[in-house]
Image (tube, rainbow, N blue to C red; front, top):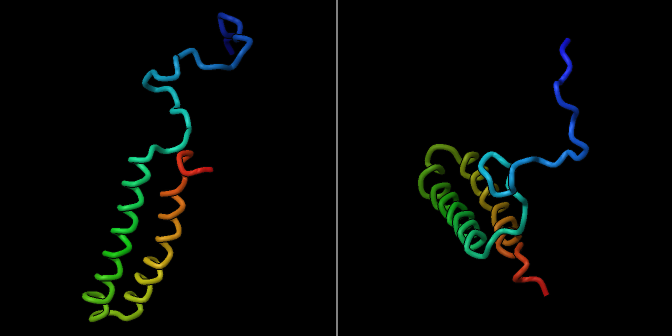
Length: 91
């Protein structure tokens, strides 16, 4: 077993600056534009699921259409949470 040639540093901080590639991204609140985009994508997926469930899938399987509707029912609360998650909306 070989020993390391240099002693370990006293602090465990990374040597790379925070913005360098390969360093972990800092966590923070999402921007307004990102939150709006995520909200509209989730709500669009909800509408697509409902329309597909009751215009196409119900002809083949009622159970699958009901499951798609239940999934579409769960999406709007999460979309509202994501849409209101930023610091700009806190009072």
